[in-house]
Length: 104
Length: 191
Image (cartoon, rainbow over all chains, first blue to last red; front, side, top):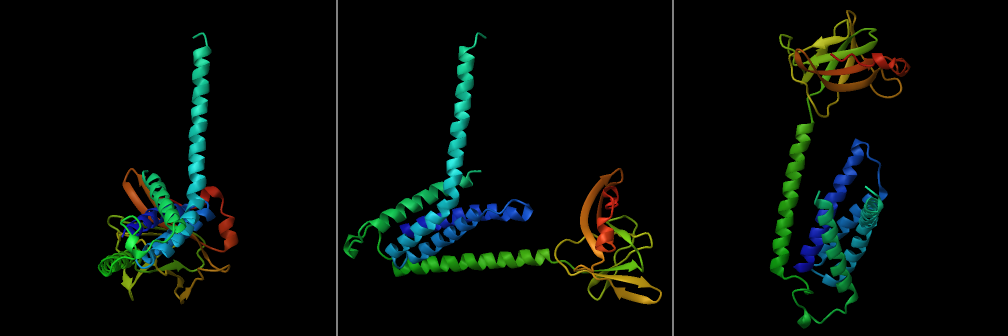
């Protein structure tokens, strides 16, 4: 039951999130191919969830491939968030250093 | 806002779990435990199958209902023969006559100035509207699709002024060249 719950939760949550992002193309947002790949990955996770009820080890391999497909979208997104946070922190430290070094 | 973070966490969990199970040696059935179980029992499969069926049925019902709400009654526009320019239909105008129904279609007879006021509510959703030129000699259909179409730039809108909110629908009657030749300032005649 545990593998079913893990794969099902991952497939449902990522699928819903990526689907909402993809649906924004209707309102003129640019189409991102990685979002589509990630949506297929979410579908793969849902398939793996049901396969895990019968063959847990085959399901694990399906889930791993599907999860990697989903990471094709989330990976760059996470990297970008981390990079922007680190970049923002660097700018703040520069400013604070300047304030500390200034005569005001 | 929490959804992307939650998605990343569950995806991380699924990736780690599937990777561990994939690369670890398959144990004999006697060694299966709660973390790495063997195939689910008959009872679990039936429960999950039944729950999935319920979810699918609920989704189909919801989708069917939402599709019914997006379909509206079609309209038949009767436009004066040889009319060229913008047609404006104003809805929910107090004192104006309601739209008549003929053969399950709303009939919108546009006046010689290209306008119509009605007390009927504006309809939203998908429908196959039709357009006709009318004259004392009779009516003939106006092409409304393809390069020879004479109907362009159909829009729905809502405008507020001193008399309150007004809902309207507009479209241009003419060739594509005539539509494109419209100066920006003359596009649409919002009430």
